[in-house]
Length: 97
Image: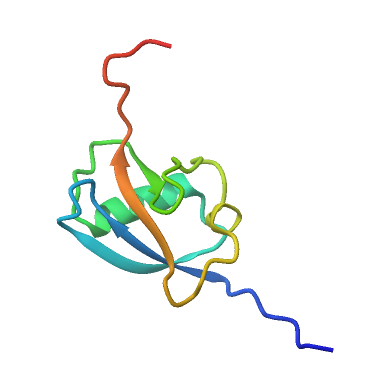
């Protein structure tokens, strides 16, 4: 029987801003909500703190749900490459629902 892989309590996240001019690599708790992670990563990238930030998965191009944990959103990502995300401002661009 093969050994059971241990799930790390941390997830490696490689983040960039929307222009790809700044990047940061951090380890965050798998249980951290994506919305909280977005604010932490925005601060790490020295982005303005008066802007609501979100995360977009660079592989799927999907915006990550703020209320869901990083571990649930990222799943069993490759520990070598980490989760690759872009920190994006939450804007509605003047559109109405």
